[in-house]
Length: 425
Ligand code: LLP
Image 1 (cartoon, rainbow, N blue to C red):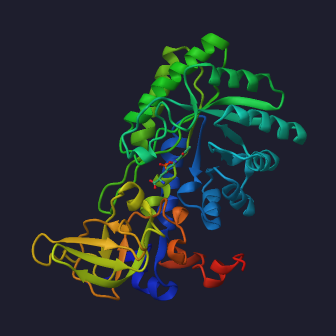
Image 2: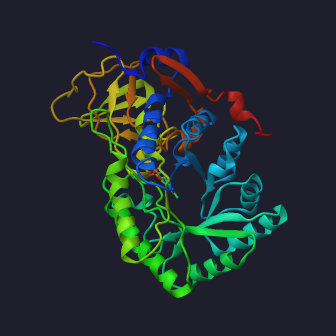
Image 3: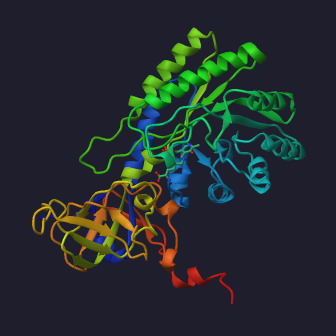
């Protein structure tokens, strides 16, 4: 039986070379997602753009890859923006989101010349105006709206519902006053609207509902205030599947119906079709990533077997936060059948953090393992490295890119020196 291969590389060898836990990304898969975006969205529909939501997974090598693939970047913080700037990512292809932007973040965004700031609060407008005036330019903005759609996903990753902390309510004076302010300002160039309904969605119904609402809003804004919406950002949210044997979400299964609806509604309401922008994060990276762990020990209790590994919620908090489902395989024998100790026992893969909630997989299907064996979790490319912590002073794992049989270290494993740096007595 052959061992697990990822991006053409033997995972056993990767673990020996780089240690564990280890985040491994098949950069070929990431590139093929970018290609799918170009071919089935950007080339198929005129006047469209795609921005990678870097919160899903950001390293400098990842930013470079996105740059090579010709997409833009969505950033939400000083750190994300500085990371993009550190590799000279073309700033006009960067957009800045965020519901609580600081003055420093807005200052950096305006001064570095980001393509769009997505405004999430009326107060931002004055700050943008101030820095744009000082820089002697006009800053292009979109305004984020909450389209009042309750997305079919975990409540923590649903963002477009009425009462959300994100965006301006569609109804009422907050949005209208902001648009008026932006239009009257010499230093703000109001281009249109933005929404993001939520994350990890498997069919386009929530996006379609939102497009229905927002095109209705566009019609109202035109009638009420003669406002022209030239750009509409649909956000991200396209889902990722838990193992490579399951058919991935096809982007066009979302974007074709979304674009058709946009065209139909614009025709019905007699509106110009705005530029359409998508902002996927998870769909681009999640399935490209796996995490390799070493089994530290196995505890067989009457009703449950705990497989404890050398990482956990510190490198992947997604079960602890959202009860996210994962699947694991043995690196040595990825196709081996699941071992059932005495019929119906429960197997949990747990981490080494001091919390009962430090679970990676609640009900794992794994062969019989021993301490020292390696396992790999699939579909861990999104929101793992980017949400990692140093809880229990665990050192953050390294990140490796693999493609066509070659591996490349892109983030070094954190060292104890890194951890103690800046920690003063
Ligand atoms: N655009 C905006 C404005 C967003 O807030 C997000 C995600 C995205 C795009 C990208 O969404 P995606 O395509 O990745 O679904 N930590 C959670 C996910 C939080 C998503 C937050 N916003 C998780 O681990 O599931």
